[in-house]
Amino acid sequence: MQFREARQCVIDKVAAARPRCAIEVVPLDQADGRVLAEALEADRDYPAVARSMRDGFAVRSEDLPGRLRVTGEVRAGEEFAGEVGRGEAVEIMTGAPVPRGADVVIMIERVLREGDWVAAPAAPPGQFINPQGSEARQGERVLEAGQRIGFAEIALLATAGQATVRVNRRPRVAVLPTGDELVEVSERPLSYQVRNSNAHSLAAQIRGAGGIPEILPVARDASASIRTLIERGLAADLLLISGGVSAGKYDLVEPVLAALGAEFYFDRVLIRPGQPLVFGRVREKFFFGLPGNPASTMVTFQVFARAAVELLAGEREPRLPLALARLTADFHHKTGLTRFLPARLSADGTEVTPLAWHGSGDIPALARASAFLVAGAERETWNAGDLIEVLA
Image (cartoon, rainbow, N blue to C red; front, side):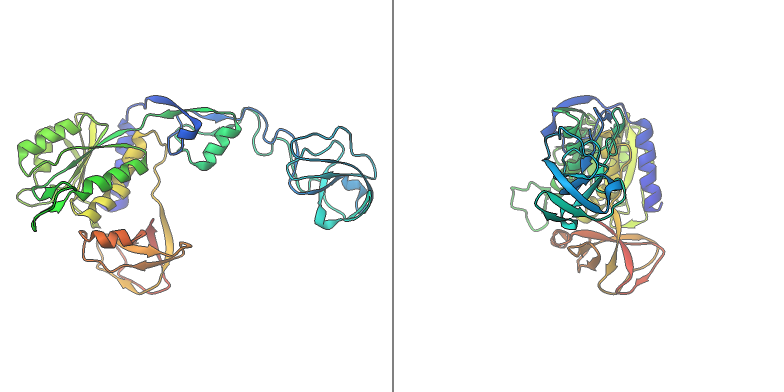
């Protein structure tokens, strides 16, 4: 199964079967990164009155071009008590309400002022005026339920007077690392052991996707240990199992899941790293069996499992942040598999440089990377300057 087909399978299965999210009420300043539980409607017109978009003079377009008498000024946060009459101008600041009678604002840089008089050029009606209700009308839906809240959404919620926000409960995601070779981060590993980095990198990715990670003890390469901890992990909303899903003698995750009655939607995706990826459902809970090498774990979470976390958090449309950038060097690979390789994006995101690495266990190379270069399965060669997909 190609990666886009597999990702769509995840989205379709989880979207169709996810339970309704519980709702929490949080202070506005704690809503960043959460998923909105209900739509937001504008509580009034925005802007509530026509406002000036520039510092300058509010005038009547029919008096232009012409020499106009300045009759007052209006600043942001106040109203002009009078009206702009024939041959008159009111000095106005950015954001101030446009006085009655005026239908155009002339930038201060475009006028010549002499005492109480200004000479102003011709201008069309409406120039530099933000009309009442042009951004949103009272009662208009401005945010949708299922929308992830970022800084712009925070600003809109604050503008609409939402001191508290109704958000979806964050899903609990159990992380089950497997393998006899794993030791805790605080331990000194022997030469044939490795520290349990995957559980902690997955926890970081889960938090970034809007979930709450729950790291389980390491399951050893024995069916009883794996089964006990899988059953414990199924108390969460989603189970991520790291390792034990390849074709080796001690890769026991799939047989244990099968014995528990699991339904498998796929157990292989045509990508590298991460080909032996497992996705399915058991006891009404979705699970992923992620390959155990660090790059495989990171890539398969980002491309597949992240979408499941976002859907379980109530998001409407999980998004895969793929973009195009220009290669700084020639690149080639074998066709047949889509490859996700560590790379560095330029500061402006327009150029990408593949990094040298030593396979999917090379954590230092992953830490040096700022993106994954995505080499499509059908194409073999790219030249420097060609556009190629990147996963940032």
